[in-house]
Image (cartoon, rainbow, N blue to C red; front, side, top):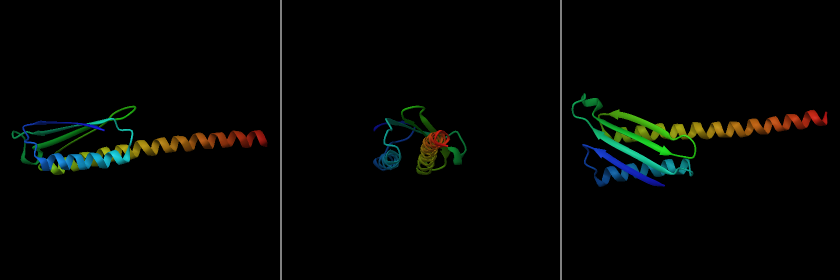
Length: 117
């Protein structure tokens, strides 16, 4: 999976980059069809201290992209919460797909019973 990392008024350290990569690899295990991840980190000193760091993530998949954004006082907390939101979206999408497959299988089973009866 490709990763695009952009920053605004944030110094990208090796630790921050490794933290983001570890979160994205976790997401990659949940959905192997992910094409790329775009992560944007921002620091705005004009906002209140508890809302200074913002992190947004867009995960490109076949179909609609997944997007999440969070604002926190700590950059690492913002990264963690954004990856958690994307993880929930992946799980919801996967469960919808599984439910659709079961619904189609059940519909096929009903038509076979009606024909045999």
